[in-house]
Amino acid sequence: MSPARTAASTLITVAPTGAESAKADVPALPTTPEELVETAIACEQAGAALIHIHVRDREHQPTLEAAFLEEAVVGVREATDLIVQLSTGGAITDPLEKRLTVLDANPDSCSLTCGTTNFGDGVFLNPWGFMVDLYRQAQERQVVPEFELFELGHVHALRRLIDECGLPYGGKVHVDFVTGVPGAMPGTPQALLAGVAMLPPEVTSWSATGIGRAHLPIVAAALSAGGHLRVGMEDNLMYAKGRPVAHNRELVARAAEIATVMQRPPMTTAQARETLAIRD
Ligand code: KMH
Ligand code: ZN
Image 1 (tube, rainbow, N blue to C red):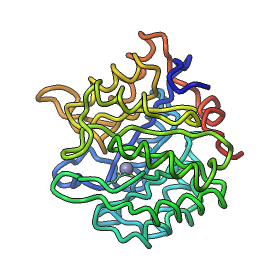
Image 2: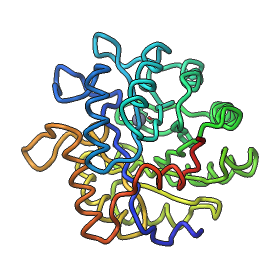
Image 3: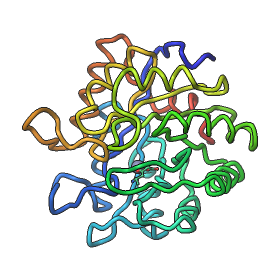
Image 4: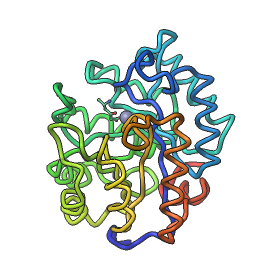
């Protein structure tokens, strides 16, 4: 399938929490296991088919500890049919070795960022050796990676990764353009379309994320260009000017509504599992 061909329906991913916002500043952020499961149920009902999870400890701090990750995977699996994707990006302070242990929690999917990038005032480290280790481990464990592309150079690094390591488990290649991170690829239709034009032919589906004020422009641009969507409070805390997001469900519901108006209604979880070749 050509990645530029418009899919009939839209895969909506929700990224509800992230590692960057503090619970004290954003009380609506789901940081407890109960809040995560409640969010997952509500977002599935609103049209999401995949959940990208970062977990927090009992003090609401980002963590990569196995017990918290496993609790999240099991809890969301029991309560929903969402594809469970764990972040291997964590927070920018997380060591690479710890990030590799995320796969021990047995997710359906994992994020895999295709290179180092500026990340606001910090640096999000993804050296080549780490990418290869993570990719090979995902292949061995039948975990489907979602390749995160923050920069146009990351598209080329994905080309190199496929050349060197082959295709992911299941044979499908799904990527997500993360646009609008300060210091990285801007959240503009022009940058997004440049990335889409560069995608290797092995890519079978792509989605896009617009950080902060890039959120709505990127939703519109991705749908127009045949892509899928990632929304959620990891990426955007404002529903509209002066109106904070009250619940992740709102962002999913609005994305689903726009997609439906554009004749690209939300995918079911079963369709999404087939699209990404998630193991049974
Ligand atoms: N929190 C960022 C440093 C991912 O989930 O893989 C990295 C991130 C990407 O969110
Ligand atoms: Zn993330």
